[in-house]
Amino acid sequence: MTMKQEVIRFLQKNGVETRFVSIVDEKVYINNLKLSRFSRKKEEIFLEEFPNFEVKRSKIFQKICTRASRVLKNALSPHDKVLLKGPGNCVNLTLYAVLESYTRKYGVELIVHNGMDGLNELEVQKKKLEPNIDAVALPLTLDGEVEHILETMLNGEKLELLNSQSNKNGVKMIYPFINVPRSWIESWIAIEGLNCDFGDKAGLPRDMLEFLEGFIPDVREKMMSSAAYLSQKDGS
Image (cartoon, rainbow, N blue to C red; front, side, top):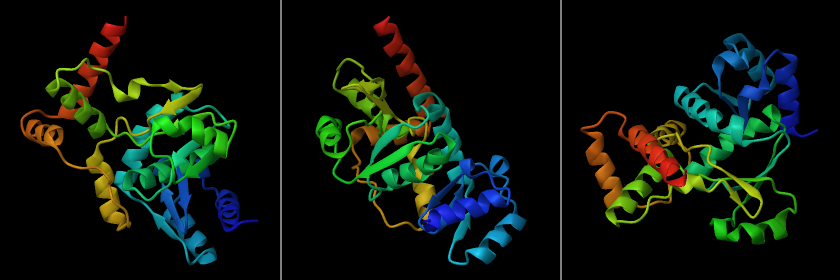
């Protein structure tokens, strides 16, 4: 039995709902405090048994998990084999931390690979890694999509949302962070002091978004909603 399996069994034995916690290395992240039933007393009992572990009660991480769950409840099916990129990048690391709980919640299998740099490699990765991959989890954030919308507008191109691609070569494309602002992930990474980088570069679309943010409340969500409506209208 692995250490993680021991931890899961111990938590379940003591009344913790492990479908609502993520176990990464020697840390237990609470995804939903109420549903996990992970009280302070249970934490004390757990740490007595596993003193090398930490229990993390980050409110910002719980917010990220809540937003992601609204996508994942419809995007994932029980026992899906989900391919995702390795956790060196900050967003990918956060994505793995969120999805880890779904190995118990939905019984999914996470297949982590460091060489998956783009959708165009998907078919090659399927052949190399796993013949029955059901889904690919992509780290597109709300900011990433909105910046793409702005860039499309600046270039005078037809609007096509990045997250509109829901299937490629018979494999589901899922976007757990499509409603998660980049700032939430940045805050969580800063609080945790994790060693990673965001791997993206600033540019005019991001500068414009930051400018608009000063005048329009919830500008990201509003632009996303409008773009989704226009995209559906064009497709109808």
